[in-house]
Amino acid sequence: MNNFKENVQLFFTQLMQDSIKNLKECDENYKYMCSNNANVSNRFYDLFQNFSEKDKKFAESFLEEKLLLDSIEQDWIYLQGYKDCIKLLKLIEAI
Figure 1: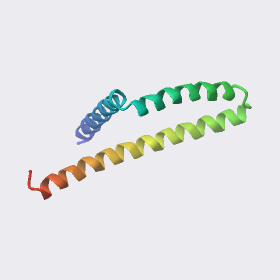
Figure 2: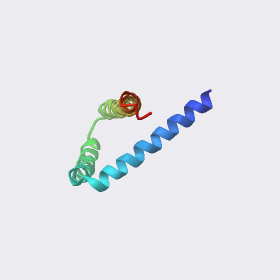
Figure 3: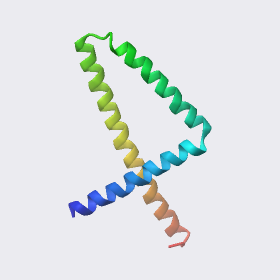
């Protein structure tokens, strides 16, 4: 059963990655925001170099936790959207 769950998770991960790639190709505003984020990330990294060791550890911990939280939420929302799609298709008797 665990292998099945891992395969399903891998399947959804690939779908999400493909969707984000498509979003970057289709949405100029999103593409701009990604580029801008890369520039801001570089600026943050420069500032980060001046942090004390204590502040660096705090910032790294915060950012890692925030990224993990965002990832969990993204996975959950994507899966919920899939479930909602199935419900809709059943409601309109398409399946």
